[in-house]
Image (cartoon, rainbow over all chains, first blue to last red; front, top):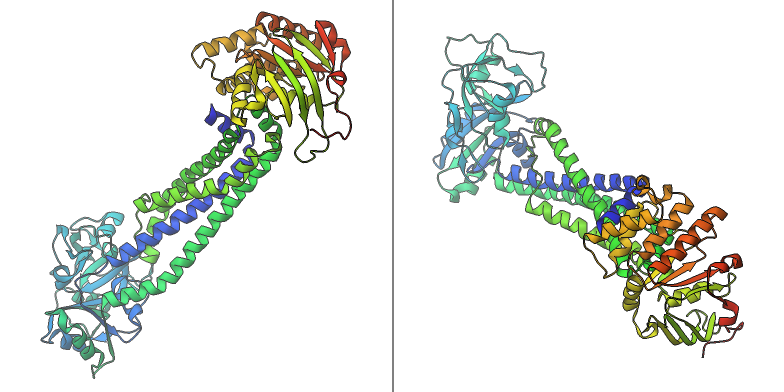
Length: 398
Length: 229
């Protein structure tokens, strides 16, 4: 009966209750969305690369190098010569070196030119190696290995032929359609940018650009975008980094992925906190609106409150009644806001992935978000205490 | 004694110098149906609020149904009111967005009386007895006519089987036929349920339904600007 009274009373004030509900829903949407994307992006960034000791590229900011080499975000400022890369790979302290060549795309997905070593040495998350769901690494010039998402989204299977384009736009005029590639392997999902990458051999990349017909000699690349380096001993990291940075023949930059990542956090931290602050302020505004709506309703319902008192309702009943109305609105807002966020993530997830390299799962419920929502309910109770107290001490209660 | 007031004085806490009510002694016997005549501003609402325990007296003894309200705390008085007193106002007796049945159920919520399956049977009996057609039982009460609303208010007041029923100008919003209809239903139900009825009105023509008629001006000896002692 208590709940029924609260529900019917809200339904009786549909207009203001609905507007308050909308304001609350939007604020919950913003709050949950910011928190979700924040934690997800942090996880997905931190899990993108592991086991790589140094990343080598042309001289630029370490953040820029990290972003384009690992996250495929932004454009490389310059290439490094194949000779320089060979020199680094020949360093006795270096265990392995993987070349990376970027700049082409297939239907909006980045094409990565590399060697078969990539599949052996590159790891992500907590030292997970890349794994083939089907097929194996490329051997021929026109072999291609697809990331899990590329294969899934574009519906490719082993043996399918595809055409690679120069440039990175979804629709590029420079289609290299005289040289179709054949799918020889599909990687298992990693939840990193690898899933959205089309892998070909360096020779394949050269072949696209040099109008080179299949059957001839394998051309060797003149330059690559960047390289990933694994060392024999971690102890040598700084020494090798210094050697590369002081390389005479060409200006090079070597970065430690972990250090660059933490630089990225520092930069993102400010943005994160700003976003959080804004989402909290939006919530506070919505809660104040809720409180104001209820306070106005108390005035409007003075006689109703008086009547309830006369038929024996103690003052705390009235206090709880108003609190319950507030909690009903905010719970319903949580459901609406969360549903809205879920639907947006499902429909916009691909855009986030393609445009920002962010892989955001649609599962928005974690322990963290449950705590956050409990805090919202608590904040609702506090904000509604003002109108509730007003109902508690209306002039009829002496 | 259903009501026994001795040396009761009331002044609002904000203005202790001005007593609103000052009653040496006033009693109402059990099962008595009494008409109290009073113009507005004569301390009528204050008296009724004291008797129902919404207000507490500044001094004196307020005994209702043998219990001393002046010795109870606010919570006990709320419970007492829910359990023993029925109340019908001039208007706004019902929560406008709830139907008749829900309004009556809410009243039973606060009393310790039966919460069993008998409750809905009792509600149905009362509503039928008060000529509220079944089609109107679940309509929001704001959609009922004033006459219907006042009759539902009687049902609401009687659901907890109160020993005392207080009616505060219940017919002044009704036209003559509705008023007559209301009065005859109220009087016969009060008899059937052995209830003490305290009826307050400025309309002397209604006094014909009652065996005892008091004037509030004689009960209340408060004079302008006399403080409570």
